[in-house]
Length: 156
Image (cartoon, rainbow, N blue to C red; front, side):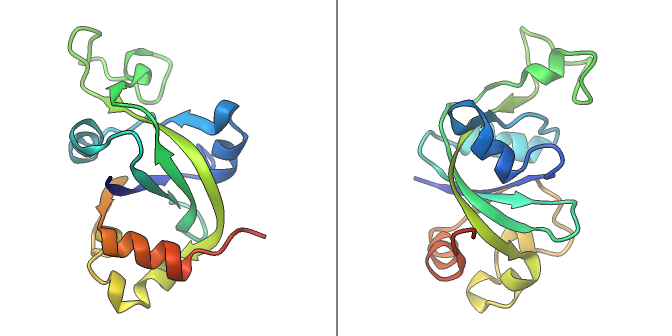
């Protein structure tokens, strides 16, 4: 089992949207960075843990826990000319972009980015690295345990 931090803009897909989705499951569409895509395509497996992170919002941070529930498959938004994620260079025969499905596990009191920075145990987290813009990053066993055991509190 591996662990991941997956960023989403809450106005596009929030932890509340995931909880309210049919079967509490959403496809993780729209990844258009090759390194993030490779993490999904080559590293993610059903059962992997996910720190659901709200980004590009007034207070970014970890908003909940989720789990990967599918193997990677082609992101259909790459084929849709009406989608903001359309990629005219991608084809059904050779898709460029993949996704996985994630299922809701728990909504948390937001763990702000600033709070993550306060803990030496998390100093090497990729999300805290200067200039990190990746929407998907691996999380170590130790980081996952520290966050889920010491920082995670259920949402009110």
